[in-house]
Image (cartoon, rainbow, N blue to C red; front, side, top):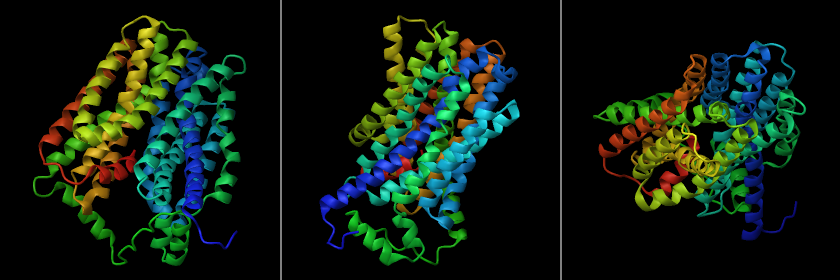
Length: 442
């Protein structure tokens, strides 16, 4: 390595390297997350493992439950072993779990594979966001986070193409074998990804952190107070319920529950529900591509709109538009119109939930912001578990046509809850502060 002084351009190139590596990791995260929904119509049609709609909903919830476990455990594990090692471990875990799905001979083994994959998926995304935040060039944090978040939906697009190209001619197992390929990427992460600045500072390796920060043209994080105790963190949680804050906190949690129910319910069941509306399998998978393209655009648009009009207003409006779009999907419209509706639904749905985190961040005190956003995300994860299960139950009971209606109602409920919460307190903080926090809990 050269001993010459680092330059801004060199620091920018290295920061792009960190972003690029994390972007690829999150791309594989999205591929593994969406692949189940992409192959699900085929699994149900061929009755693989004797799969029924209600069991399929259970399987979808296994992965989201694993994500809940992974997200909750990620912070503790990262504090012990470091964010870099955790990212490598998460990529390895969900890749091997996909191999388990690919070779599974029973529904129980397949379900175990999806649960383990969920743990890896849940731990990866918040860790990757932390990494790119640490190395983002000065004044570019929001742009870097927004760019990273597009990778998840790009993975969803890739999952649809994998299913279209492989499931019919080769079989569903081939799709899961593709999801094993990120295992080859784990050594690349281990070799080229630097350790998190926040982790180095927390471990007292301040000289190493300052050297890396200078190389990446970014500010090193402040040294944390060594007197911070677990009791202080519990006190931060209790502050969310003191002095009349309990009602606002519960409204945020309920909005997040409905938002993630909608996100993961639609992500799991969109191809199957569209197939039930009379569309061919190829067309149903094309909707997944268009939906995730909308998600990419939405992530880039929502932040700018929130900066101008306020995150609470955008969140409420986005959920209202999402509810309309999801409901319209139950109406058999001309193909071009349906594609437009799917695209716009993707634009609003995926970023509406993100705007909940922005709202919570903006309306929290600086000392309690991380706790407020983290717990809002955690409570929402229960909705992520419930959404896939709900879709399966509706299909199993012969009410699959009500699936889009049920998900639309979830959007309406989140609109009401986030709107009510926004009315209860005056705006605090700045849009820039919210932008840095909002993605960390997604």
